[in-house]
Length: 138
Figure 1 (cartoon, rainbow, N blue to C red):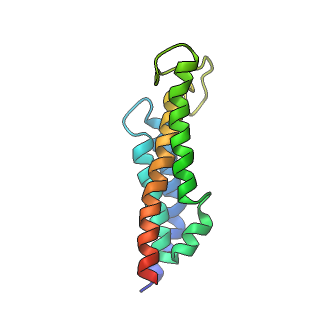
Figure 2: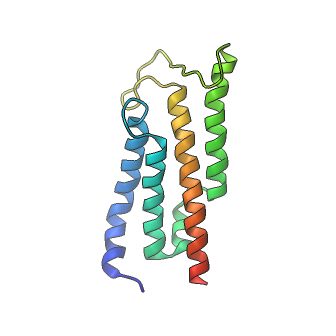
């Protein structure tokens, strides 16, 4: 059963949840939050969209298939560790740039790692939720 009120609220809440998830992602490398929590909030936004408009509507709005998000996230997390190796330091050593950006602060490998975790969590949760909902709709 589709709820008209929930569908209308989703149109407002969906972009706000995605914006909040990005805020959590960038806040997390200096304070509590980060890629895991941000990925969960983003997955919640897409799950809400799938509940109100169906799985097809959620898949249309997704930037990539969940499998691609998982792979990209794992590669980003791995790349953040390899940067330390390339600099002659141990694997997963945190390295930061010299320039300070307005929102992110000093960009570095922890931000890249958090982005990888964000994409991986988003992809895994969406893969599970959308697959389960597709089976329910069939």
